[in-house]
Length: 265
Image (cartoon, rainbow, N blue to C red; front, side, top):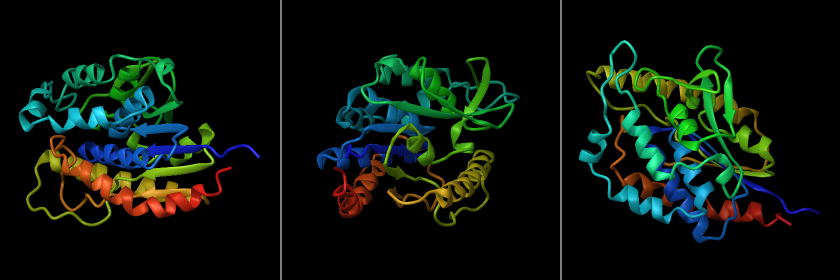
């Protein structure tokens, strides 16, 4: 019998996507192999970094040095008719992080998910410049403008597939470890701002979509769900607590992961 292949699906969730770094750190510490990886929105950046380098420690070091001021420097205003942030500085940040590499440079297969703005179709990107794909995948409606790529207008993949379990399956994975960052409980907030209202509407869309996708899946799937939701915190990329929460919940799931991998021939 051939050896079972393991895939990792990293979901959308803004700054909560930093939890992906923690999860990957624990998987690597415990020699859990990753044969395929797919990411959406924040998960697209972490998945790309890992697929290119097969390590995550250096990304963790870089992220932990970020400050609130660093994050504000990434904000480049744009005409409110288009979005709240132009996204050019964010794209430059991603480009620097992954050294402007292409999908052909990855060491394991990588898929990044976006949404076709005009048709609503899921778009799975597997070629071209990774920075362009990631910039499209993180384009939160109303916050960042859509991106034109391969003659299609694309925005956040989390709209159609917040936790891309099925994408990793289709890549060839027999066993899927999925990190789901959608909302698990009501938030606590009064008098929300326009940004908070947009973000919460998006959270609800992602939550419902993920529930439907998970319901379709069968066996050989482990879903890791960091306990990060209780307030609107998806923009706090300077908060390394998200990384630590990812590590904590991944360690909690290790016995299940190892039991499932015992059947890996």
